[in-house]
Image (cartoon, rainbow, N blue to C red; front, side, top):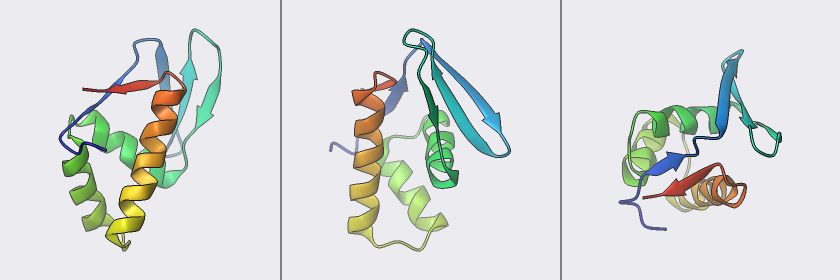
Length: 90
C-alpha cells in the first residue's frame, strides 16, 4: 500500500455519526456499514485530509499497537472501503 496516497470518499456516500461511531450508507446500493470505535477514529483522520502515512503516525500516537499489525489492519480497512465502492486512493 502506497502510504503517500490519500483516501477519497465516494460522493454517493451518506455518513452519520451516532454515539461517537459512524454509520455509512451507500446511496446507490442502499447498503449500510457500521464502523466500530477504531474504524471511526480512522474515518475522522481520513476526513482531516491526512494521507496514509500521516494516518499511521496519528494512530501510533493514539493506540498501543505494533507497526506490522497497524499496517495490516489499516490496509484491510482501506481495501474494504475500496472493494465496497465507498472510497478510492489518490
